[in-house]
Length: 357
Image (cartoon, rainbow, N blue to C red; front, side, top):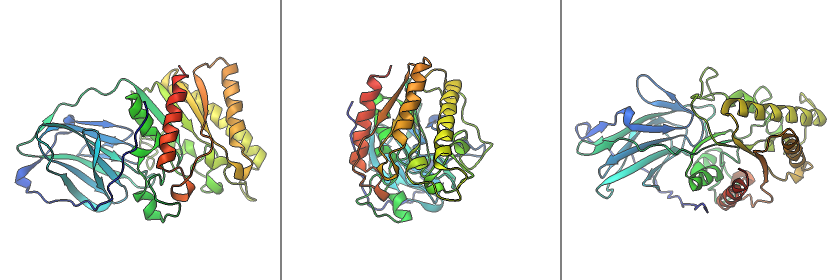
């Protein structure tokens, strides 16, 4: 059950050319997708959430990934191991991974980073003419959803230090080494991750962007498109909620739309509504609420989440629990959890879920 962290290779990735006569696009019907995205009628998929992924089963010694995305970092896994780190680049392109052992393989393309204001486009896979695309395997029966902020999005988790420029944050973020994916893989579960850095439940970090909150984005398949709708058949057995860090990590300033006391009341009301909407959408999943100490602003989050848990249990909701991360090293970008923190967090999460039936 213990998740394992996999080291990244930071070598540059080249889009190796291949003759059009020797490569063929894989039919979309043979590509298995997971996560909130929008399929385009003329080919490809659009996505903004971190951790969305595309899977291909094939027989051959090479596979190409077709992308049109200048904003995100990607990882291509082969047979469960990261084999290719793909950096952003403008325009449509095919990036090839070659010299695989002969035989059957499973390729998994994962969007490592979040892009709430920029839409990534995946055009699919390509195979050499002599290779063969195979029907996908059944998806896992177990499903787990993560709702959160930068901690859940694994912001800056593979950084060698806390100081990072904007571009470095993206390059040093890998959702597959975040606690959410590590825990989901240990459970053998399909995951969806609905997380946005800086976003609070009712108040964003330092009171910024007051016209947007978690609720503005959560109901969307694409964060940029209010009309986009998630697939109705996604029904997780477990929902993990990690919100409140941005609401309470900085003091309320003069000129904000609510004072500190009002913030606490509205946070509790919004969290109760979120719990009710999760149950209305998914039935009766087990729900795990996350908290952590925020000593710089009075450690306000933990008592509020504990109060919510007490209310839920008193109301007869027995499939709900709380997990406090405790003290973390915070060696990632901007003192966010680092890779070691995320492995520790995944272990804590797995242990807590074993007690929450």
